[in-house]
Length: 133
Image 1 (cartoon, rainbow, N blue to C red):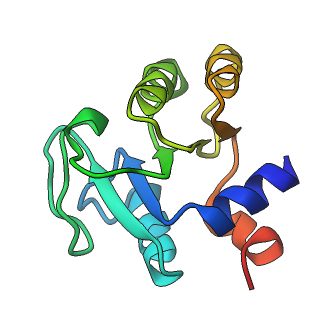
Image 2 (spheres, rainbow, N blue to C red; image 1 turned 30 degrees about the horizontal axis):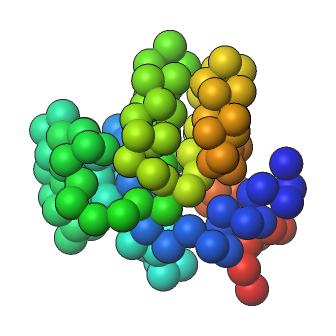
């Protein structure tokens, strides 16, 4: 798992953050700001397609008109598998399920499709020990 985390944090520059809106009380808002502060491009993905942290939002992964490296998932576990499948569909390189988000079947499908995947972790927490220096 640590090797996968290290790889994603180092190699993925464009992060689609699913569930990101301008609600400052949500974890996605702070994590997206953290990633942006580490040089990552964040792409808000939310039904409202809001612009967040200065980045244009999109209603779905399929609406994003450029390549995405990592899909960072801030939705309930029962919805996360569909997002992982969509990440495969847009040729993302990695999927990251946030703390509390777990779906073993989605993990199996996503990694079988060749993507790197992390579940139940947070990149902002993992960065200190495993992120690029």
